Image (cartoon, rainbow over all chains, first blue to last red; front, side, top):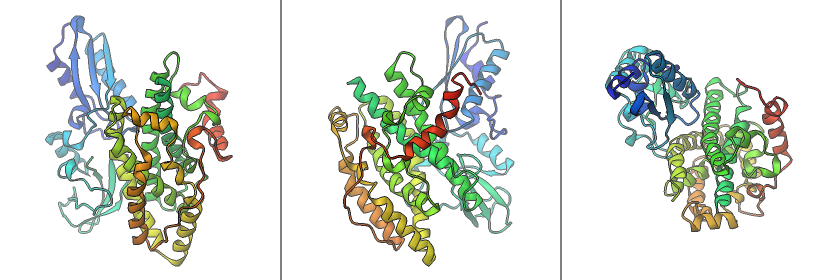
Length: 163
Length: 250
């Protein structure tokens, strides 16, 4: 079977992140590169969000399963570290889906992330759009999130932190 | 020369692994849920960094070597982590102060490692520095909270600091291996980090109303494989399963 790189990208757009199932590996920018060699062997290069992200093995398996289900016979998934993943790679569509899901998307670019011992960042509540929110904890339910609470609608929410 | 690099990478990997293992023991025991989660997250980052480094070490060793083999089938004398990191967790203040002293060092260390002539170490540093920066923010904020908190938290944090101080010297002591690594542009000149570390630590301790202890006699030996009695217990727990059932699979 002969496949094109564009076709592989379309299939990758259907592989979901196991921790945040509204996002695909493409929305997150985890899939970095697709290479199709002769005879249809495919290599997909992925990069971890956090070095200890426990979802990486599952993501790798899911990519392999998806491509094999589509008929690709030789699938190789490679992990690369450089350049390191940044929330800047998250698509606009991904940010919209996150907010709808109740997780505040990363705000601004990773370049303005707090420097060492800086001040707290203001985040918009994904439920009522208030800017009057407060960080409850720098760490949340997964490595990529921190915990906030809205001071207006009082709802607690996860914030996908800038990295 | 390749052996030098292997041991150097293992030193960094062992720091990450042993601290990650120690912090994991807080899971379910944190003083409040958010901080339990925070320490578990930091532990996870440390384990992730340990994996990147041990995968590299296994490649440098070659042959049948694997990252799991590096973690689970080396004994105390083959471990090269800093002594500070293998000490018992103690109470919350002890864990927080140890984290602060190490995170601040680790932040400056990985900032320098970004310039390593070794491409693989460079890309590991690019990944690690983002996480380490975040850890350093968290532990500094907690040192301020405890130091400038209640009378009891202040006293306990000051005692943690005094008790742990003698274990900090090792971070900045260069040995022959480190000198050779620096000469080749691969490693970090840790002695040169001391002033920056001192300044940052002094700044935070000042905010925390804590007294910076005087530098006095310092413990050393971890990097060279001479450890405290505590590391054996850490390894016994961590290595028990793969040593009992070497073919165990998830």
